[in-house]
Length: 263
Image 1 (cartoon, helix red, strand yellow):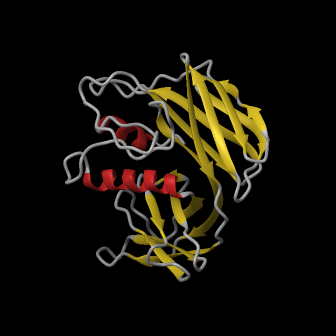
Image 2 (cartoon, one colour):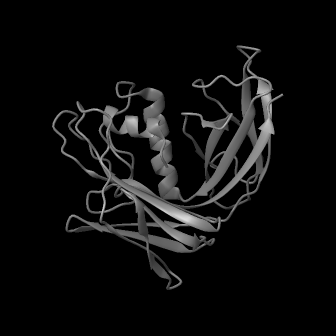
């Protein structure tokens, strides 16, 4: 949740984490503070976390004020509902909960006299078989990490991968769908150039199976990352699943990890 580069991107282009299904161009110099909600619900039993903060003007320092005192409710289509507890300023948690495949979850946040909602449906888990590595074709000292998995046939799937090298997350967004790999065995190379990976490093990958709306959010953000604010695409917010003008995302997704020592 707390990926500094993502937050830096907010204010290079002055967007924030997902809201409703439209893209809004924001004036970089004059945009006022906007609410940012970052919510994740996984299939892993344990605390589920929501972070709420506000944007700052483009010319301000990267100090994103947390939003305290919000009422945060997580509910689902099975009739369950629970309120999250604020465990530190702007950080809300609900304990001993796990998401289920096929269930649609709703996150409702009330703060400042307004209510914001987002929905996400948890996809079926696709097993991450293994991690491997290969020598970089341009620099034989560097390695590229490869994720290996079987994509299910005739089912639309979307994926996000978080790569950690020696316990530090790589500041690259890896998101893809199965438009060209449906039903195939996939060996996907996690290309990036922000972190040197060498033999002997410890590589960990978290594989998330995400719904279509969340994929659109992360894929758009990855394109902004690649192209930059002047790189051939219009600076704008990524598509979001929150309403009422909130920025951010709420993602109900599966999570699994594997670790290797890079050869």
